[in-house]
Length: 244
Image (cartoon, rainbow, N blue to C red; front, side):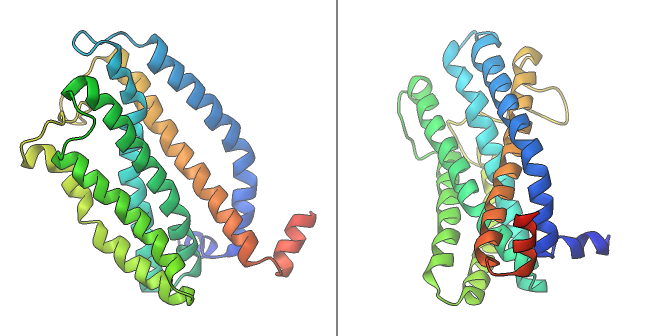
């Protein structure tokens, strides 16, 4: 266990790991995105209430789910950075922030597109939507803090603190539809009891959620590899790796 932890704290090992996994993961992710999108957008049955407008869930829901999970990834990296001073945790935290922000932006935009025919408005100050907007600002805040300080050690600590404080928002997002009056529909996927969505619509949705998770991991590795390439541009191990 400690050997694995030590390896993930080693820039050369992490760089090699990303270098080996990315060429396999990239084509698999592209194929999964194409298959999942076609399955959900073209072949899943039409909803008897919302018609074809509901199909945006195959983008909106996976983006929303992974945006929340991605914040925990970023906050966990922040915790490791703050407590154990692992420099690669700073790199992981910085790598996760723009990806999470992009996922959250996709969730907000697709939610607005879905809301127009469903609620009659592009935007409402609904509890779920408002807390998702706060999540977007938290991601952007972490990105901005990294650039605001010349001393990157201080920047990493500030970002770690912000990311950890921001975790309070995640359960609020999850439970907002239960705690307050909300136009937003409750969760359709339930792990205890039957889901409120037919299996013909559920399976492509689950497939897209898994695909969005894999895409997040792929983008994380690409970002981390790029950061390591810039940070260790003059190191012997990187030159050796690039020349192999």
